[in-house]
Length: 238
Image (tube, rainbow, N blue to C red; front, side):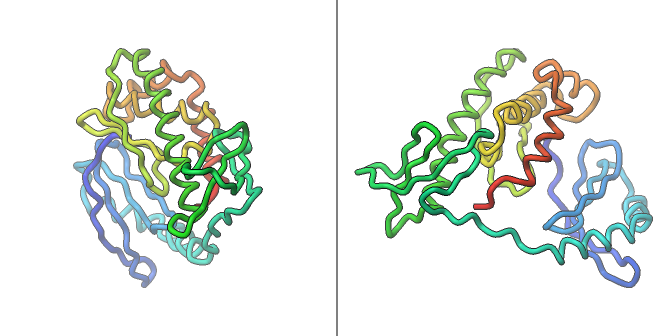
């Protein structure tokens, strides 16, 4: 995603309730509202007047209050319990966790199996995340190397992200960040995110020209964007 100004914390009164929100200004053309576990987030064009922004929030005041209440009532996601035989998705396919002695190795990938050797200083959950991050870096590197030449750009610096809801970003300096949790998703979905971020090396926005670049790299991007959202609801919580 293209870079934007840092979030600014603000608040507004809706139906007698003070509601905190984060305001992010960027090159977008419209004002947008989003609510998740972090609360109300507002995206606005760089030149949008604060009065216009808050007028839109008030127009959708009841929706905002209802959604915030729904998030407060939602039970916190349970962390995945890692035991011998636990099954998780890896690139969309089932991967079985096996707890076993491995000599000096801490983890080892086998066919449809990931072997972990927990210790007093490294739990199975910690080793699992380390192993998946290692796999993610290898897969993302390979996919960037495959798609960057198609766009005629150099291989970009890669950073793994741990963002809760953001799957990728592209900096003005040309570096790309990809969320390591994409490793749970099918390779076609990973490719969509990779192509999306590479397209920002040509167009640092979400204009029609940007989406034409994405389509050049990933013709089925619309369906894959929907699949990304669907998959995101089901990935393990570590």
